[in-house]
Length: 480
Image (cartoon, rainbow, N blue to C red):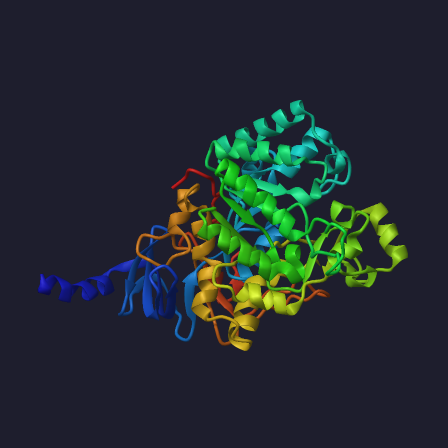
């Protein structure tokens, strides 16, 4: 036995792998490994993790670089080539559209087959199903009858049928943008939860209400619904139905109240509710100007005014006149409204997942679509030391994989650096990784990401995108 053990490193070193990553500082959040190791990849899997250098048909010397599991983004609206290239340059190997989802899961996957730089997947969405049923033509989120109209029992039955159809076709759960559909009753949401709970599917939810209480202390007036009210609705629905829930972008929903929301999520979890949450590392949000978020009273709810809104098409800050004009026309607006101390708190919390909420169109949008993960590593780990490198990696890899793996077992082999895991690996320079995207130039790629391996294939090599390869796979529930 001792002889075999003594020979084992030599046997590893003698084997030739498809790809060898040598001399990297390897971080595996599952085992706690954080040390210089050498990784051998074969057949799209991690085949060896060695203390001695390995041979490969292709070998990359990663001395001075960090190798981590590929970053997993649970909240990526951008699902085309423009967005995937920027996600890749930000270290992402799996980008999932889980908040809004799609009404036709099969068609969504078919449209992307063979074209993916990175892995992608989708939920079946309450919002797009409601848009379909109400014949609402709003872009991304409703702007017509699906926004404000209450659903009949027959329409709720159709929504439930759409949910069940999507889950049978591999949807990664249910997507909800409840704030975008104020006409949806609490009973409608509960009924939709019940449909998903039959499959033990998770729900990814933009809560119904946001912001902080606006009633002054000592006032006899009843407080208006706020972010805590919205969070309590989904906790109650989870308790009633048993459905796992994930609250998206806790900072932009909670604003100054976000730390209380995080506390509430953690307390609910301690009481047995299967709940999680996420944040992105920016002080601004983004949404459609025609959406329900900007219905009457938005200034009081959000604590901002016209000058805090930025029109992405031109970069201009809005006035009362331009707000009214663009609300009639429709389009995307950035809302500068999240306190920096709230961002720091959420990014630093060990159990809050990092997710981008990213979407870019023709180079226009929010910088989170291009720079989320590098920003956490550069600004909040290296510069401000809000959290350790190991903690940040865990929040970008293992935690999002674990959020999905009960329903989508394929995720059990992602978010880890271990033998047998999928060879989705991001190699970066921890001393220089940086987000370059800004609100004025949101499509600038991140810097310091050296190599990104997707399913064993280098798709980013020496910081250059390899445009001829598309190893990304469709991620579906039930697959291994």
